[in-house]
Length: 392
Ligand SMILES: *[C@@H]1O[C@H](CO)[C@@H](O)[C@H](O)[C@H]1NC(C)=O
Ligand SMILES: *[C@@H]1O[C@H](CO)[C@@H](O)[C@H](O)[C@H]1NC(C)=O
Ligand SMILES: *[C@@H]1O[C@H](CO)[C@@H](O)[C@H](O)[C@H]1NC(C)=O
Ligand SMILES: *[C@@H]1O[C@H](CO)[C@@H](O)[C@H](O)[C@H]1NC(C)=O
Ligand SMILES: *[C@@H]1O[C@H](CO)[C@@H](O)[C@H](O)[C@H]1NC(C)=O
Ligand SMILES: *[C@@H]1O[C@H](CO)[C@@H](O)[C@H](O)[C@H]1NC(C)=O
Image (spheres, rainbow, N blue to C red):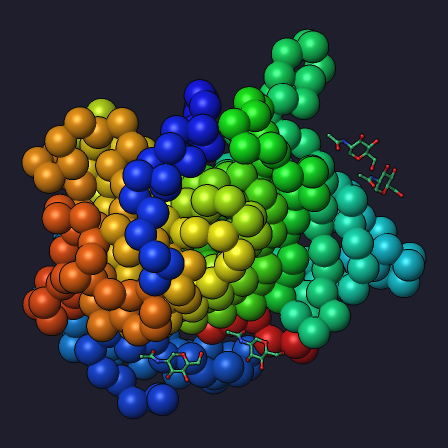
């Protein structure tokens, strides 16, 4: 993926556009958190999610995996019933001293939930979880987290002396399904690219597997921080920091209760969602932000269209004054109003949320239009979201 002169283009756009800165009850669209890791807690969680499914049934498409999302996916149920924990401690008091070694110990074709209990500290490692190793959990204490960090950029030279590119710059790449992380910091600490510089993409986390859930995690970098590449993803109570296009890809994802922060004084673009007719399956994708907070330093665009049918929704989100009044940018799409782009806002608050000043082709969603996006049903969560891993 190449972004020629991106920031330069953006800065130009920005100048043109620059106006004065501006419970446990199961209900439709709600997420039910049981908090308990015990077996009965888990069963209760599943039962509650299924009640939620019944309430939301009309919203489910047959496209959800397995039986359409009615019951917890059988492979996942059996994996959860057979948990194993590996302790990873850089100080040497665990089973492994680094994550690379612990992941090597996960068998190919893994069928058990493998929890890597990551003790606090910095893990300077570049990680790749192969698709043959599903059901991996990274668990750490959000108050004293494991920080996984590397510093490649798209311009870093790889083994053959060629630039590694955006995908290759990634600190932690997840290609397996059923990944879970809780309380972990994913970071790319390459120096921030200068506006207009080439090869500055520096991905901290790339999620390519489906049915991935991240709770209480921090994902931090500059340009292209989070490659929400492909699959069904759920981000709950996470902090995501970056600059240009810092949440991008064709995942179908719900971001709930997340804090999204621009780290540049110039112009930041929060999303570059790649829903498109030309990549198989990508038309099912979209990013839905619910109950999030957006803030930062310079101006912030809510999104620009990487794909011809780019789709992003913000609901119940607090938008800081840094969000530019026009909100959105069509990028390379000549006629955004008719290309299939779907950008909408619903009941957002804050100085940057005034929908009346948005580009003409952005939507202020009605209740009916917002409904499909504002719950875990958007990611068919009832068939695969389990309770967040507990500390024990
Ligand atoms: C469950 O696992 C089996 C064996 O690995 C696989 O063939 C099947 O596709 C999986 N089912 C789902 C719904 O992922
Ligand atoms: C992980 O630990 C093993 C065993 O101590 C060591 O051989 C390996 O180099 C370490 N890898 C990383 C990436 O730190
Ligand atoms: C993933 O693991 C399988 C089985 O070990 C291997 O054949 C394959 O090359 C690996 N894929 C990548 C991208 O590393
Ligand atoms: C990445 O970090 C290493 C050491 O931690 C350093 O030698 C290297 O120059 C850094 N690379 C970049 C692109 O900053
Ligand atoms: C996030 O971490 C805080 C502090 O440890 C904890 O109280 C909360 O339950 C966690 N939330 C989730 C979704 O794991
Ligand atoms: C939004 O999140 C806050 C705390 O993170 C929570 O108290 C509140 O109930 C949430 N609101 C909605 C509409 O989900």
